[in-house]
Length: 218
Image (cartoon, rainbow, N blue to C red; front, side):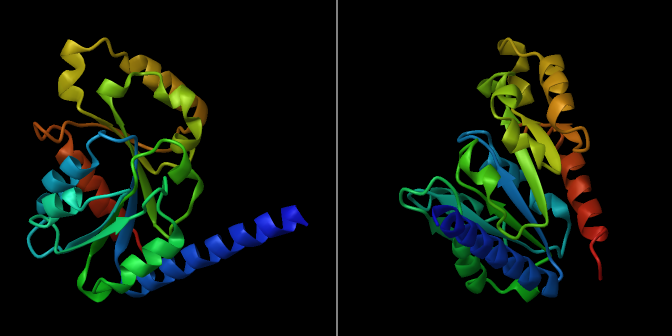
């Protein structure tokens, strides 16, 4: 009986995620779910890359945090629409929370929607929110062993961004170790080395986003 209850909860979650995706498909926007540990640079990446998407391109952001509106306030100047979702004690965003966030946005007026998930390398990886693509960020200060320690986070990634690469010179970081560990869990996702602070790699990330949106059914 307990197994049936768990299965029904998961089925309901997947059904709501599918409905979220249907709503965004109908609006003809690309939704990207950003996942990472806290402090990897998700907000800074969005601050730098949203204006680079091009003149007339409108992007919205759903920001997930346990508390505060600080990240949403930072993004208000770069995004066309921003909604903060505070989870309280929740370690990840849920499809229900995203559905509520979508209801507060004018989806028809957006070309892109970014979900800045709660900073966590475990829980968010297990939940489909209705996104079209998953972007996983791994920052240099976190160390080069995280792919091996948290493989589930990277297995379903559509793109992997190695962030804060400007700090490689002051830290003992081995890109080859990350590459070898990724080869065991995900060989399909492109790996982009970037530093939102200096702007390195941001153009490559933006080009990837444009390619993904161009490939969507019309």
